Length: 393
Image (cartoon, rainbow, N blue to C red):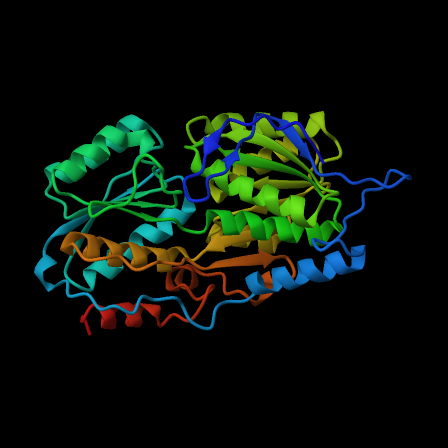
């Protein structure tokens, strides 16, 4: 395996490995035959046919909704918190995922008489810190920082915890320098699993020869960890695949079309383009159009919501998309906020993932009601399960 990726020595706390990527560098996972055609042996070293079978088996678990959501089982009595307020601070409200999670969290807390206040982080340390300070000054009982790493607002997070306001950081890998304790919790989400599922799909769809451009978010270090897990999966199942990383940020949203177009023009063999998060989908597609590659590349995205799934159904650019159960995650945040405010131990939360493709999207109800209900990922009864757990029924 030849690699031209330059490591940035980002230590990953939960697994202790180093990962990294650099702007428009390529990771080539190529095992070529004498004729120059890329071969894709199976993870176990078998034939190409075996590789396809293994990949399809892995894909199957992502293609269907769950039989039941993984709701915690330990009850919590939140009656003493009635009338109090929890702050929800998303990294940026550009992300369609947070537009589902936030209202779901509000609905969940309403069920037990707790108020929710949302403050947009605008993807800037200044605004994020201001939101956290506002929560402390308002006497919040907990703060949920969605996709906001500890490092980006460490002083504000430190001040909140010192003031007795517990912090829940969502959709982030736990920071080694800031371990969880009675004032800090992590609800990691499913960022890695979404990228791994897309890697499985691209491998199967291309027959093990995908040339993929990934528009990787640089809003903190965690998105790089998610992509690193995808690169490990490509290395495992698709040694004939080539991966190029294009770094993008929410703060430089307007530059995404140009950088995407440049990457495609630099390598005309790219045939898959992955927008890591759905908030980057539109500018990514614009970059494909600028490069004159519409209809010549297959689009992919993670953290997909209704708008992205409607785009998938239209068949104009997207061919595959992964999403995590954002409505369910809102209820998870509510559960975690109550437990943190009460000083009780948190359960281990799991946020489900599903893969949607042009072949399966026809069976999905594409409405705002379906998005909010969580039915894309499993039975909608999880809300009743939570309220029963909280004694709110």
